[in-house]
Length: 208
Ligand SMILES: C[S@@+](CC[C@H](N)C(=O)[O-])C[C@H]1O[C@@H](n2cnc3c(N)ncnc32)[C@H](O)[C@@H]1O
Image (spheres, rainbow, N blue to C red):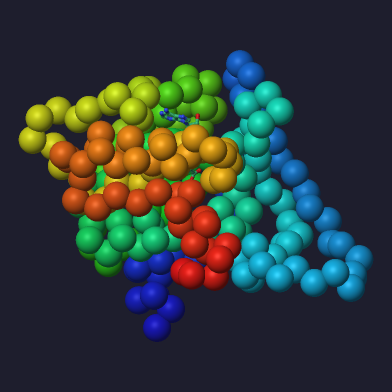
């Protein structure tokens, strides 16, 4: 039944964040129009196929950090399913559009998620995105301005699901080193850790 399936993984939903600007960060609404038919075949998995529609983009200066394109949801779904399957406490590094937070908290889950704690280093991103999440989820979401590489929870706090997504580009040459550092740093309080660049690469290669 669809309702049961949605308890584990809710359907993709585009972001309803309003457009805005804070410092050098911008939230922009964009429309991807239908394209004329072409003979060029997109050999990538279906999640990466061009989908016309209205989207939201988060940029710092000229760098796109996040969009709500379908593949951005698809490549975070392992974290969404894990969080909603085991419930409890969730830790997210990297707020972005708050897309993964909304997917985890917006609808009833298989196992209740008590809180989602988000570590975000940019005060501007928090200014743009946090009100939208706090309005929906009140004290089930906690947003902390800090660096994911150094932040530590209070002693005795453990997280059932930890998801790291702080990078604009999954293939940048520093990403593998960053993932290894985050894995070690967060190991003491994490029951499970996942990394968006790894899942993005696996999805593109058709492995997941
Ligand atoms: C790709 S976005 C996250 C997208 C998010 N998963 C979503 O579902 O919308 C990356 C975010 O990580 C933040 N970030 C980058 N480096 C960070 C760090 N060292 N510590 C905490 N946040 C960081 C950026 O400011 C940005 O908001």
